[in-house]
Image (cartoon, rainbow, N blue to C red):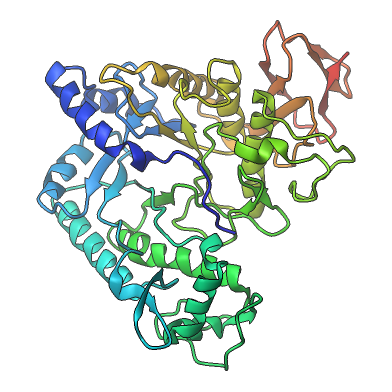
Length: 476
């Protein structure tokens, strides 16, 4: 189910970022992208980071997005030139303007029984899709003709209608009254209370699911149509010009019903349909009301416990939740997972404590090869928040080297576990990251009985043979 949840998105910082970049250029503190190209190009990386803002030049493992504006056609040539200065395989484009009106056009508003437009958008914005698709094709054709490269396309599109809105009586009535929406409702097997069934009507020609069975319920239908609209309007035309481009949309990922994921308010999120070809869950450390969910709640990814305590909001709790989110995605689909992380001085659960770097190591061992870093600047010289993510990526790349990365451990972690342990096959060995709730705890490896000294830290690395019976417990 798609529900609006409070997660600060990159778009909110746009005006400030533009101003900061102009001032940075005037002050001479803007790091050169070409220097990053020279530093990154020689060696393939097991892990990379694409950043919302340009990182400082000392951060050799991170590279800033190339921001593009579809409405500014003359900028396509300039953007193409900048893309050629980016490292091989790392021409990462962030589409920040030009797709905003996909769901905002008056021609796509639902109509009442008398044919008058309402203020409610249709789940399938045919006019918005056509216009946005045209803008994407025109811009990126010019961009490619000018020699532009695009290996990765990131999007932060959140202006779609949310499921919670369609649950209100007036929205349900609008869906029933509009002639085209009635055709969409005809594909829903079980309608919610207050929405009378309609006769079987053939779906419209641009319905992306005409050759599929009926949807189980309204939520499933709306999820499918919203994500299909974004794909058809933005990602499909981009792939038409750059067939191998990797693409993700902030907050879009795929999970199956047997791997439910709760958002920060305790509601299921991230249904099976998704945009792009890579998952992008936001894992900034914000937590909301989820800390109050009881451990006995059956919504906790089918792993409730006989324990009525609240889940909690300590850094280890947020870490455990974040790791369980990416593992649920990993169990649900084969698509790569590119989590959005925040800069290290972002004020949330991982601010000013050692669990920030633990988060990055666990996400990497869950199979991620790309971090999308939200690093807005508090000032034109504010680069402090880039240093720790850069160091973590560098550490992971040194540990993995050129070894093949194999299957990660994807089992769900018990919600009251005092340990968060992640592992992945690296070559013919297993690389583990072990995190405890308290630095005073040491860890025992079973079945060997070896005790690992945490050396006063909350986390440490461990390398072992591939043994399906190997597990870790607190050494009390």
